[in-house]
Image (cartoon, rainbow, N blue to C red):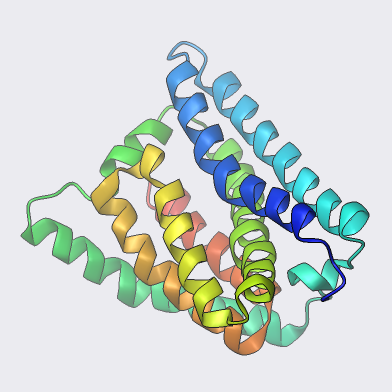
Length: 217
């Protein structure tokens, strides 16, 4: 990968890191309470365009394969690892974070959930599958692999990616709630660096959010 120019990687990282929080901020500011579904759909569409652009940079400009951003054929082990990680987040990490937020008198994730309250369950299900997949491709797949190439260290790459991912959630969930994503994102990042299995982190991300946002209703 040493022959890949730095410029396309830089552009790809700017899109991967800066795109999601920008889309979230603009979508929330322009959201119309009378038409919440339309506003949400515009934001979702923007994220899809964003990930297509980043994948395009990797394939057409960098001339690399999908496997270079972690996208490989999933296996049954991917599914099992993903479900195992999701079980940890839902049954252990989630309740612990809720308890901590309750002890400090903070509403936790309720601010974010209230912003989603006007959206139908069918849309939230689709959005969670799409957004969870996109975030894993951008922050776990593309960002970590490219930052590791630039820095020479997967752990440096993972640390930067975790911080950027947590900051990207601030517009939607607030500062304190987003701080918990440093831990959950750190766990997913450590797993990815260990196993290089993006399919498993996608499953874990999507299933955890489905339980926490859709089923929690």
